[in-house]
Every structure is written in structure tokens, then in C-alpha cells.
Length: 299
Image 1 (cartoon, rainbow, N blue to C red):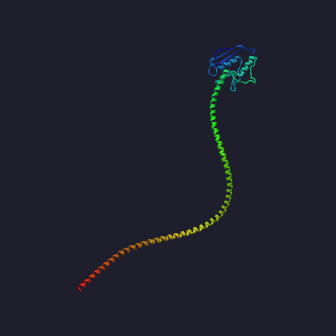
Image 2 (cartoon, rainbow, N blue to C red):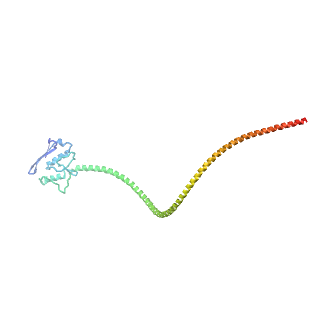
Image 3 (cartoon, rainbow, N blue to C red):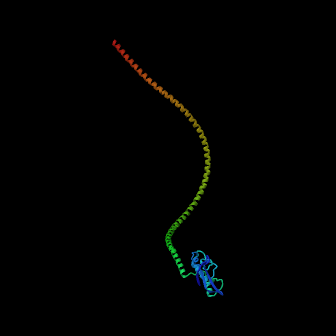
């Protein structure tokens, strides 16, 4: 295999020229790489180099690019952003058919007992496994912390469960007590229901009696109302007479007050006349005595 760098058609990363006689490869095989295209960050350069080398060993293109998450390096079209791809079990089986069984056909299929998958180098698989291990270690390290936290939570839950069990026992005892009490209350309710029925019957009888009493009371109230109307009329007349008598009494009081005033004045005059009369009598007596004395003196 002769590997040469060259400037190929635009967008072409590599070409392979194979010589064949009677269906068999005739060396040398020439492989041309356009390094400017190969080194562009579109697809890994490893994929381009390996793809052309496998052409140089006699492989053609695969009619698919991947199965599940397993990629095929001999896909006809390279895809932008594809990962680094290694030979597959299909590629190795085809190389075995070409070089060891002298198979000259145009198509190679995998046997049913051979799974399609990439065959990665030991170092690559080891690195991938190491990366997976580190991710798992980091992930499970966090999980260990979560497990420890869950254990603490579990202990707390166990304590809560114990408390709930105690509460359930208490509640069960309380429920039993309440059931007994409910049974007793049901019996009392039945007895009370019978009593209520009896009372209802008695109340019905009393209601009938009350109805007749109410009728009598209504009749009596009618009579009382008519009597009250008559009494109210009489009271109104009495109040009118009382007002008239009050007016007469007031006028008589005024007359009496006037008479009292006149009487008081008359008493004053009478006292004055009495005093004057007494004074006159006194003066007359004195004059009479003096006259008698003069007569005695003359005799």
C-alpha cells in the first residue's frame, strides 16, 4: 500500500486505487489523502485514514451508517460531528472472506451467530471503561451520600412508625371504648325513641285539649275586649268629669283664697276697732272716775 498526499477534488478527503487481475488484488494499492480536507474539524482524521486503508485492503462501502449506537466505518458518506469510529465485526468478517477464503463476491453478510458491533482497541476500551468507572464512581459517591441520608431518614421514619403504632394501640383502645359507648347510646336512643313516641302521643292529646282551651280563651278574650272597650269609654267619661270637677275645684280654690284675703283684712279692721273700743272705754272710765272724784271733793 502506497500512501501519498495530493490535492484532490473539492470536498474529497481521500481516494484509493486498487489493481485487480482475475478478481484478485494486485499490489501495490495507492491511497491519496488531501491533508487540508482530512485535517478539517468536520470528521475525525482517524476515520478518513482508516476508511481509505480498508478500501486498500479490498473493502467496499456499507449500505448503512450505524446499527443502534454502533457505527460503521465503511459508510459511503461521512457525517459532520460523527465520533471516532473503529472497524466493525462486519469489516473483519469481510477481510477474512477476502484474504483467507479467497471470496470474490460483491456482497458480504454477517453470520447469524455474529453480532454487529465496533471492535475497539484494548486501550480505547480501557479508557472508555475508565471514564465510565469514574462517572459511576462520582454518581455512586453521591448515591452513597443519599443512601446515608436515606438511612437517617429511615431511622426517623422507624421512630415515627413506632410512635404511630403506639398511637394506633391507643386509638384502637379508644375505638373499642367508643364502640361500647355507641352500643350503649344506641340502646338509650331506642329507649328514648320509645319515650318520644309516648310523649308525641301525649302531646297530641294535650294539643287537642289546648285547641279547645284556645277556643275558650279566644271567646273569653273577645268578651274581655268588649268589656275593655266599655270600661275605656267609662274611663274617658270619668276623666272628662274629673277635668270638669278639677276646673270647678280650681275656681272654688280661687274664691276661697279671695275670701281668705278679705277675711284677713276684716280681722285687721276688727282688731283695730277692738283696740279703739277698748281705748274709748278706758278713756270714758278715766273720765268717769275723775268726775266722781270732783263730785266728792265738792261735797
